[in-house]
Length: 540
Image (cartoon, rainbow, N blue to C red):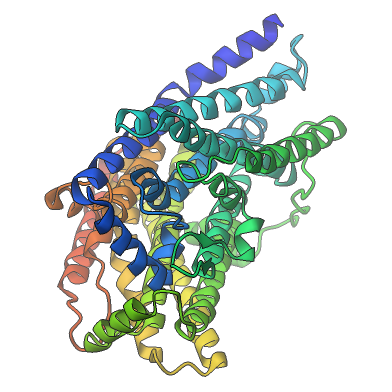
């Protein structure tokens, strides 16, 4: 027990700032969103109109949630729950991998195993740490709703739903950490599963069935394959069902149990999908820093690329299916289509634009990982060994920037290819192929910002690279995509690159924001490369 307490305390201390950021961020987002909604949609009639438009616009359901009624609590749960659950899932998977596979990579797990704690006690401490983090996240969400004046029981159920989803992905993260041989691969695949759960929930909600009078709405089948969808089925503020929480908790126990069995049966540092034996001599193609960077990141780039391709296929096929259906609010649907037609935009184009906004975030994360890999190589000491060869620091940094740019372009290209192929297969002519590729290109400048700015942070303040990079991306998503929801001032929302992403709609598209962002990314990257000449490398 003494060893367990020490290891648990070590994890809490190690993650104290990250945990505070995650928990306070979710609580503040809940409070600000609730306050903004009360100010903007204080009347129930206003909220009812918004929900009718949402039901007639499946792209909104895809990004937000499942409408139940126009009460303040129900409206709030519809708008913010899915994003809070997504944050809890990402927090939990990163935590699980950091204290399992990552510790094995660095060798610290083997050192701890040589003490009386053994190999299994650290895993118990990680589970306790993950449970603590999700309990705190649930309390933060509960407190945010409660502070906004919402019903106590509904607030408690909403917080418990977010915490339960986090626990489900804690187990998933521990399981994936047993499968993959590197923390980078484990983080990539575990985060992909979280995003997949968000998308499945979105597909189920977008394809849901409204009642005869429009509300409430029943989720489609796809939502029942998602832990986020399970938490949504609690209907906090509108139904008060606790039993759906058994599903994510059951997944947490099952996946965590499988991870425990695998941990008991494998050697320290081993994995289910271990690395293949390398060649005796490197291929000629590995003689450059760029080739080495590609070799190190090929797996994660492939994962992000497959995610982009899948999203593109879903965007085209789902957009076509939804655009051809009628909803209960037929008058609103007809009016909405008339408005979109005057702007030269179809419902399919609206769905594709919404899905591509998520693809832009995936591309930005893929580019960001190139810079994070730089920091990991430096902190691990391998960069110093590489730079002992006739390779300059500038060449080293430039090779990762080149790879990051190529990976961003690859993710967006595969997304566009998937959307174009699915539209062509369905015979949908409401969206031209050129518009699909323009929509993908519109996401490129914002994604490149999250490659260039973290690169400059890496050069100026290396220790802040990883935390600062993810913080910049998270702040950009919240301000740019959810800023209006939480009532942020326009001047604050404009700080996010995602706010300035063009929405292609024929000849009327304003591309000025894209050109400005592209110029900022190029100049920032150039400054980072120039400053790298005077920067020393080290593990600190």
